[in-house]
Image 1 (tube, rainbow, N blue to C red):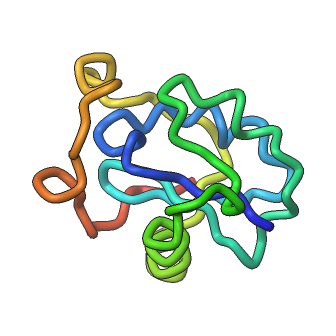
Image 2: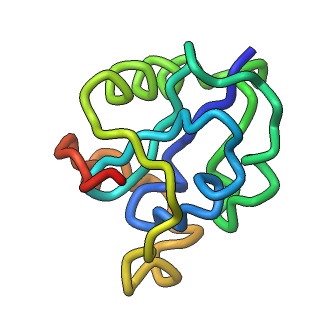
Image 3: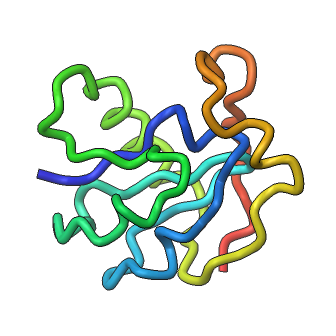
Length: 112
């Protein structure tokens, strides 16, 4: 099992999860984070820390797309080990549905 970052993170990117991760398995894109599934130790401390509720265990049904996306972009984006500032408009994007098609960016973030 691993944890997966899903669509709710897009344009929110709060990063509270990064601060509690004991193995630094988060990677930063321009407007969302992903978890490297081979590095995640399945501790689950990140899930309750996400204000957008964007992190779920991969055992939940229907997360195959997100597991694949997390794995793909964790290999391309820089590792992030410290909480940064979320986007200024993060709260306005929190809870917005169907963000992936129009708002997902494959560009890397800054990392730390």
